[in-house]
Amino acid sequence: MITIYTDGAAKGNPGPGGYGTVMIYKQHRKELSEGFRLTTNNRMELMAVIKGLEELKVEGLPVQIYSDSKYVVDAVEKGWIWSWQKKGFKDKKNVDLWKRYIPLHIKFKPKFVWVKGHAGNIENERCDTLAVMAAMTAGPKPDIGYETNRG
Image (cartoon, rainbow, N blue to C red; front, top):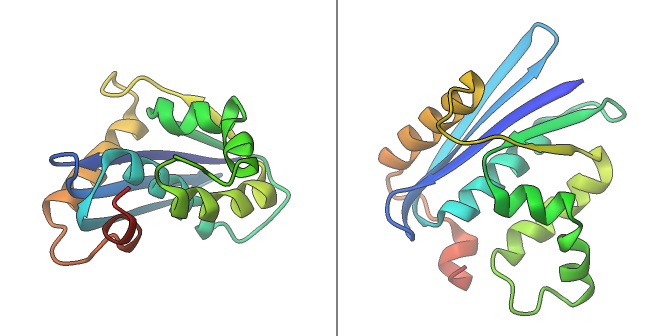
C-alpha cells in the first residue's frame, strides 16, 4: 500500500499559502511542498492530495490518503464530487483543482482517512510543518487557478 499524508496552509484566507505531502511506500519516503503568493487553505489541502497522486508512477497498488481536511475527505468519500461534476460544478469553488483531481481518482482509486489536525499524528504534523514553511516562503509564485478564478 502507498500511504500519502497531506496538509495545506494559508496565512490569511486568502493569503500566502502552501501544501505539504508525505508519501510512504515500504522503506521509501518522499516529501513534497510548494508555496504560492495568494491562495486559500482549501485549495492547498486539495493541491497536497493532487501533487501526491501526480507523483505516483505505478497503478494498481492500493492508495490511502490521510488528510485533516473535511472539505477534501467528505467531498470524495461521500461522493459529492460526482454530483458536482454532473452539474458542471455550478456554484462550486476550486473547480480547476477538482477537474485536475478527478482523473487521478479514477486512475488510482485512493481511499481517504480523516485525521484530526494538530493531534499528534507524526506524519500529519510533518505535512503541516511543510505546508506552513512553504506558505511563509511562498515568494512571487502565483496560484494561477485562484488568481484567475478567485476560488
